[in-house]
Image 1: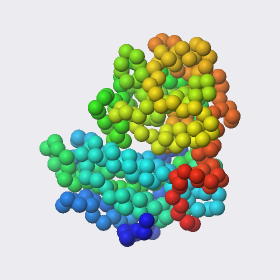
Image 2: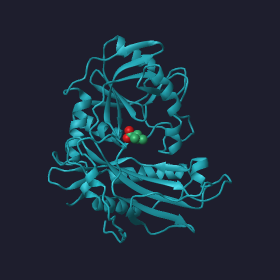
Image 3: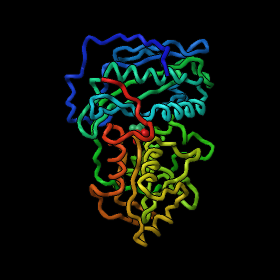
Image 4: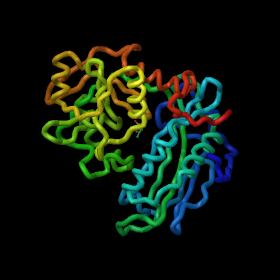
Length: 356
Ligand code: COI
């Protein structure tokens, strides 16, 4: 696509890059020098600009702060073997943002604004893309209701902002999770499939309670007596049962994860059988008892894959055998990393390349 969108760039005179140790990048700590900002008012999206990252001024009566009309995306850009930078699955993230915005009653963001905005911002802060193995530049586009009003209703004004930040590899200890049989994350007909701010605020309390009880995360269910599994923490979840990869099917209570979609594609191409189907806590228990549950792992943009060691089901712990380099979840992660960094051919056309 030839871009017609000219985005003015106001560069910072005080880069913070030298203060960052690219060998130690906790997730969510560092923010790159610039941000993109575009406003929606008078019924249309206004021209974007790239500015030094900094505070916003906002009225206390700003709608998003009160009624949660706020959505976001989580994406990554990678340093490739040849020094160029790739942004992963721009189109799929744009499509999901549109679905989230529609559900939250927001005016559609033009595709060009999202695509060209991200490309330009990554280009401007290209020096912030780490080259250390497993590291990347996390991209956070988000839209929120910015009108000053406290009457409940869709806002007439919005802000679209993108900021970015370098993040390190994620090598978690295998997780201990609990099948949550009291709280739920999402209900049928609700907003579970949208990447809206409230979905993340709502899981904090049950997660904190689970942590107090000695777990790392909760395994969310649909709240039915069958305890059909939906997600793990803030990630999608997958199970390797015998040689079949099983994951709950997309619905209005499950986020259409980009990593989920990518790993399902890769697993299929590696010759694994893939099943997107309901899986209950009781089926999991039986699979553990028959020793056919080989692996369980969360999948998301931040972690890519997060192995689960123990699942607590109705008062009892069930564990899978240890993970190692050869584990299936690590094989999937390696293949995905190789595609993103240009070590393997991008046969799926997932990468958008920014030339160095
Ligand atoms: C992810 O796992 O990538 C998520 O979506 C969680 C995010 C809020 C950090």
